Image (cartoon, rainbow, N blue to C red):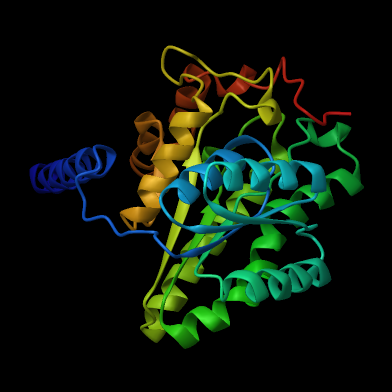
Length: 300
């Protein structure tokens, strides 16, 4: 029996490795984003801004939204100067009214949204007993609840047109816990669960709408300034590379992207070994000390 079980596990791992090699090298069938209307939350800085620029270069029309109006306008300005189509809208993703208003404005300019990218996110970087109730609630509102608000705004027209793509920028912190990120992990676990359930709901009704969940480790942006794991095993990710890889995942209709590849081992470790092995494994990856020197963009 053990030999049979071992053989099944080997087959699963082989399938996973082959699929990962194909998608990571861009060898899966790719769709064009030419003419698509992208609604990007948190598009004023970081990977949100980079994704806007990449998608615009590939022919998409971009609605750049951000709570910081000047950042959003700068991103849109740079896209238009490069020959792309973009508008900027100030939008607080925790406000249903703001999302509704942004939806009306962008539809008047570019028509219905066909690609929704829930990229806006915040992190406090504080331990649970140091985090105020207000900051914890804000983290959940921005990183989880906002996904529900935007999807409820844009999904109906996607279903009506039988065309669309919804992208959830989650995190490897949505797959495994990390000291100093209790509220953040809770919010990203929520984003991962939201995406998975949404995908299944869409499949159940047979709509031609794709979903993609993005789970990277630490990226070299101001948002996670000072944070790092065991860089030998979990190197800090370059923002340009991450943005390019996410756009590739969208074009290849990948349901889930975990990067770097070592993140995939979390699933196997959790499924096959006792919890204390997972804890030891995460300690070896540097997760326990990863937030010790965090400064971030908005820590205070």
